[in-house]
Length: 206
DNA sequence: AACTCGACCAACCGCGATAAT
DNA sequence: GATTATCGCGGTTGGTCGAGT
Image (tube, rainbow, N blue to C red; front, top):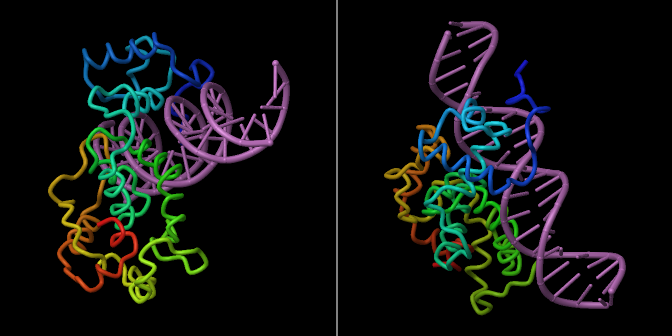
């Protein structure tokens, strides 16, 4: 059986103190990231490695962009979620200075609701027939046809020109298999303008 | 002023993937 | 090839805070 990642009885849990943060920052500045298993002891922290890694990645990293999401960031998250689903690390990898946790939280607290208010099912990005549509009330035909726009799988998605193959997220982001990479590449290559025009979220946020 | 409720977000947990042995 | 150790991801939880009553 897998051993626990750390000896739980000897580790702190919960919110990080300023001193703990400083210790972690100092240690990583000196020695760099990595080897999270041994880091806590080496840095003099009573935390498990996992906790240190999370704290650094989600909060302490100097390149993090804190604060509200810009409108273009929102749009990008929605588009990427339509393409990738809940692959938060991949999505975050396309948003400089944002973490997967931050993107995930923002999606769950803001964007899901926003889509639902627009009558779009946030799970599959299809127009929800039961909800009122707030967008393009005069264009009922595109709304109807859009309900099936994702049924053909990723290859039916419009060309988002997101260049996902050129910049696979860095060490802090998700791993992506060659098959997935291929899939994404194919979806970028398949140019289906008429299908693209029928995609609810992708249409609304163009 | 006290209470309730919902939103937000940091942190934890479980597990799959991968590397090392 | 099997086993073990570690990393990293995604789902979930729990604490805090502000608005409403």
